[in-house]
Image (cartoon, rainbow, N blue to C red; front, side):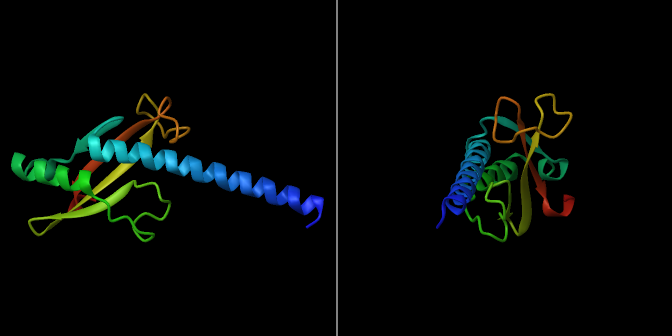
Length: 127
């Protein structure tokens, strides 16, 4: 490998490592919100709320414990979407990234100083 190719390889390797670190940071922040309700807001739709407190708590627990991430349901490896079942109903959960004022998308979802995470839990039929 000549010097020019080696330099290009190192730049690409550095970019890849930086991207992997960024994705890991986003994934960790998303897992913190989903599993521990830390680092953002949780919104539960009226459809889920209408099922009552017991069902709502059961669904929240299933969302917190969700770990069935695959390339099919998590193509960007950010742990920002999933589906759980409870009493023969499907529930979706999704994490969105906003600016701190909750007006626009976040300029950098990997940076919690500029990002407000919102976890929404809904009936699949509400999607």
